[in-house]
Length: 191
Length: 280
Image (cartoon, rainbow over all chains, first blue to last red; front, side, top):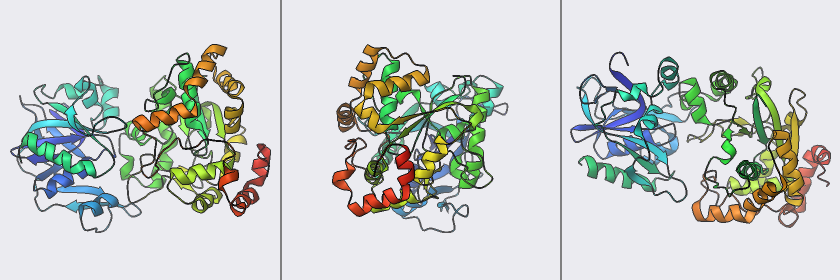
């Protein structure tokens, strides 16, 4: 925070000239969506944790890597060839993508999406966030427990300029929603 | 109660129904939305609570690392937060590995409601819930090493939970001298709902005046919950299970299990079944 940086539990992908941030808890599909966007030719900028610079007037995403980590079922469904797992005894695999963004210049953040699971009557897809974005975004801060112990729970995200839109992505645990969501993001942010 | 209240059960034993009744009772007998957090209960194996409290992602950890850390999560929560939510647990009250602690530290537990159901009915519900054959479910219930949500090619919604066999699961909770435990039988929830839920409410220190209790029982009838799932879905349904609230009738095993299947369960679990009044 003191360095003007916020780490979110999020993956990030470049769509057009901007970074699109995909935030969410474990198992909400951040890496899966990033991988699906990579298959469409978009560059993955970060996986699982992303760093946003907030020292300037516009939020900028600092590219970290060009890889994604996927569970075996997802990797197989998306057609990624399996290598050795990230850790022995775990069926999670790391995939280096042909495009590398590590060390590249930071990109302006087009939007932050909080990923959730769609249950019951809720309609999957990209939509407006229900309620105040600040606490919902604060819940996505990496190391939130420490941040909350040191200061106001919402303080880290209050540094993100309010001009950055925050939306939500709802999806079920089926790949059927994935293509629709990829399409919706491309439509919003450019192919 | 100053510590955590635990609603413990072997899977498919009726804890969701009990939670629905308690939720309604807290609201004076109001209708319940099954997709809301029933009675504010949190799951002992909730990976998001683990991630939030530990400040790292359980999805990056091995099963043994998670098992080591789980008691610390509850200790940290107890220190950090004065709130004491009720905890739903399918874990056996056993160390998941030799030398490890139980996932819930007993000194933090104010009381336990242990929900138990005839294992011959559990096996049918278990098979439907997990998309398995009855014989496969039966193997699970006999397996002293059984673990729910064990490491898989996908990331399970919940952390690994050591179940052991059905008998060991029951005994682990009922014979834990350090716990204050109230046993609720699924069959009694059906046959004598007022007396059974009133006793559970009293154990939990809840007001359960007659009218509110009757309203809560009416609002959470099996058919009502089933219709709600039909209409809106249910977030605790496994993806391959057509429905969560399927049949629910006590004694359905008589028309479903083969004599050999029933005999296998009775042979393996007869002693504990007799203890709970489930005659062969």
